[in-house]
Image (cartoon, rainbow, N blue to C red):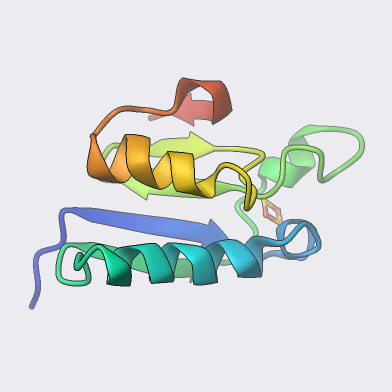
Length: 104
Ligand code: FES
């Protein structure tokens, strides 16, 4: 079995997918592939991570992305900032504070 150094979950629940999380999944896969990191980084879909339930409007924190092994939960990830998340967290190992929801 491969030993990945990071595992990224991209929520595909109703609220997140309504805000473009499927495109985030595709974008991340493309970045991992183009950087030659397929053996190091695993990307998975997840069901609703319940972050959308934390506000009255249900969805303003979506889409949600979680990165392990650090246990970092991000909110409001979009096509505009997924590249920054990849660069800052996945490539450089720094938590992207401006979209941090919480850290385990
Ligand atoms: S749909 Fe993504 S957190 Fe609920």
